[in-house]
Length: 374
Image (cartoon, rainbow, N blue to C red; front, side, top):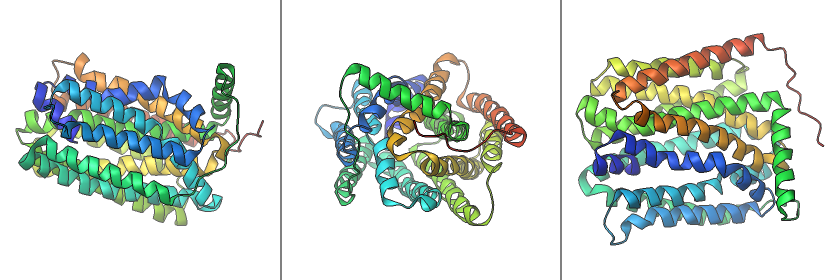
């Protein structure tokens, strides 16, 4: 939240926000799959500790007496993105090693809910801190939180991994093994695509919401913080709903239907310029996005083999990164469009894709059995 708002205030250009946020997407797309091979060959806890340490250093850079500049914000985003690539896959492996297979769907949804609760507090707090204390205050909170997260990783036990060689050909073969596994497992590939689309909706909000609040509505970072937190508040409710429904019924169509609803909600922002309705839409959109993502995350934890989770997660990140590149470049391509108009464009796209996925699930006769280990 602090990075997006600071980039906008430093440049007064919505496209600059998209470019700085696109850095993670580019790295996830081109470097992420190889990082996935790396983390499947090394101690998972050490990878998470290293990644979280890198993120902490990145978020602390604006606290040094260099002065804020767009170049510094780009550097922060670049270093932070490198750290994040080292965290997601191995953290899922640590989670798998701590949870019985039959509980992974529920635990995955609960983890998503806990993450969103933290984002409610973080997003709402950051908006007011940036409003009253400037970007330095926001980065101070972010760096402090990252340091606490780094310390908490020591409480997790490590996961035994298979030792392999470090030759280039070995890395390529290991990456191909992960690609083949995902390609030959339609159920896992489908749920990964749904998760990537749901995550991409959050990327759209990161890129468009600052300019929408400031330019379309004419408000400040305080409303931006509340609107950003409202998304996470809805996401918490969505996660709680998934946890409940996992115990009572199947969720075969709910993820695609959630994407359809999400597209309609995001597109409706083009027509609404009043603060309270915008906050309400953010709540509903966050809930729809996180329902789809929570179902996807739980299914990945449940279905993916433990020795391949690093590569699978990194390949999902690569898919998400590809979508992120397109999303974050859209303000640069659609320079004559307002943030509200771009919301409408992406809302239509999401609604069409969500409707298509729902129909595909209904008509699908493909087997969901896990492929044999090779």
